[in-house]
Image (cartoon, rainbow over all chains, first blue to last red; front, side):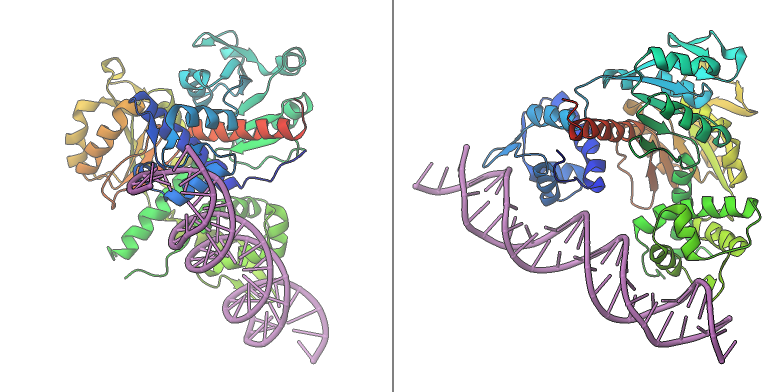
Length: 215
Length: 215
DNA sequence: TAGATTGTTAATCGATTAACAATC
DNA sequence: TAGATTGTTAATCGATTAACAATC
């Protein structure tokens, strides 16, 4: 049942196309050619056409792409035409920051609950979303269909918690802990390693200074 | 003065090597071969050797790599042997979450101040770090050498703020706003687009369900 | 019909993996 | 010296770019 595998590189670009198309849509642009989009996005027109043609012919010769149509098609490809029930495990600053992002809800990611070990947070709410004790998590997962769990926990507890989530049927984990998770391969993991991102930044600063011999 | 350019793909892997080596160091491992490391990290030994040899011969035939030495060398490559003065522009949940990360300080990223438009936050502190009004930012930048600014603002204000930062001498921006910044090319930008990460996750969920024809 | 622009094939470029001589 | 493992060259694989025929 599997179709030709799409490369990770292509998938990583899709959300950016989606963002640009959304902005075009808002500013009332109806059609756009791969060439014009390529100039705005600073990528080659060839790449845009190749990327899109992985999923189908969304354009029309001599015309270009209909912005609204393409926007909707990419939404479908990315799975943004569905809704996902999500929980946040770890209600520290980062977990609460995520819970406050209204934008996720608009894209169909519904944040149902936060969980934390800290009993002092128990019963509090963030933007109306209840914080529960982590002891209640297994039972909660049995009773509610949760598609995605965001892991915003210290490294030390992250792996164990990820296993617990997987055992209780969570199929996708958005991992903010600074560690790699070892889970059955049908569990989808998307990592956000902030400290690694910051290190890339400092690499570039260092390289820049080296190149400009600011010894 | 520029040496052979190192590919982005290599740079992205370095922080992960660094993390694994740090863990090995903590658990008292003195030496490791590319082969053993490759098994732990789930990459090829060939790739590890190629990656490292972009920067020099850190190993020894017949022996492998000295963990501590390699760890320190990678730190130097990544610029973690220096300290950076950092500010956070936007003291909402995400900004505060970043300010609370003690781990960054340990790696040499010193968070000096937070800035926000909201006067109600003015004078408050996060982990001892003062929140100032954004009006005071230009003057502050003139008087203090700031290497990195984290942008944790709504999209609407992010571009303008980035320009202001660049004009006042900030050379590197860690951008959390959902937009691409247009800055002079000597300003280094590292993007963290959380919603794009989440979309990649939902793509993978959708694809998985499609492949297992859970129609 | 003429012009524009896609979809797609072919060419190029770059990154990953394999292989092995060098050497500790 | 024999064994292990790097550093590095060569082979392969995959991704990007260029080119152009198809077609709106």
